[in-house]
Image (cartoon, rainbow, N blue to C red):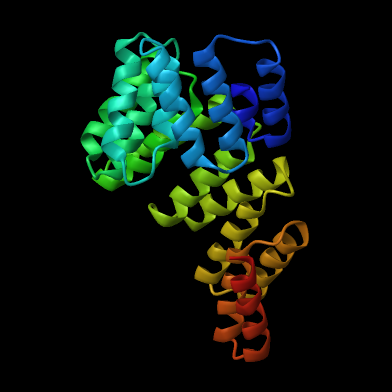
Length: 262
């Protein structure tokens, strides 16, 4: 079930839950699986209610706390942190995930130094956990540690050189933080080489070419991306370009489509 959750494959996720329930597991697991089913159906309040029942029946099961931390309301950051810490105390086997999540929650609170500390603890335990390196690459620039950010993003690529997102993240960093437009173009193009359908790399190229004042090239990149997948941000950016070029009818059409999609 959790493998499908990580893949966001909701059809197989729900099927796996049903298969598990058919095995008549212990009651606390029944509630946990029902919680996962509710989450798969997009009903987090019901999921939270079921996982609470699971914890009531077996308060020493660390996984239930780790899972509950991920489905609490966004406003309940303290509750999520407390759940992760409880899972750690109960020696939940995926300790690095709890430390990573604590880092994320602390980052949301604006406690960047503490977030980094938690991320680094996660990496000590699981150095190949990609998402922690990605998050370090995102949080380090907030405290002007650009060299460490680039090192983290380079590590992501070393660990998974065939993932378009890895190059896209580094391209965003080079563009938005280092103002290295040529370096960003290289990374975005590499992302597209790996996965032509990865639209955010097309979007990134569009942003670069706008900054280079090459409007035609920017529109060409966005057109390529939109042929592969419609995204509101792509229409929004192209609409802005058309507006700058005084092509108001096309600008309005793109901005309307962006609103329809988002």
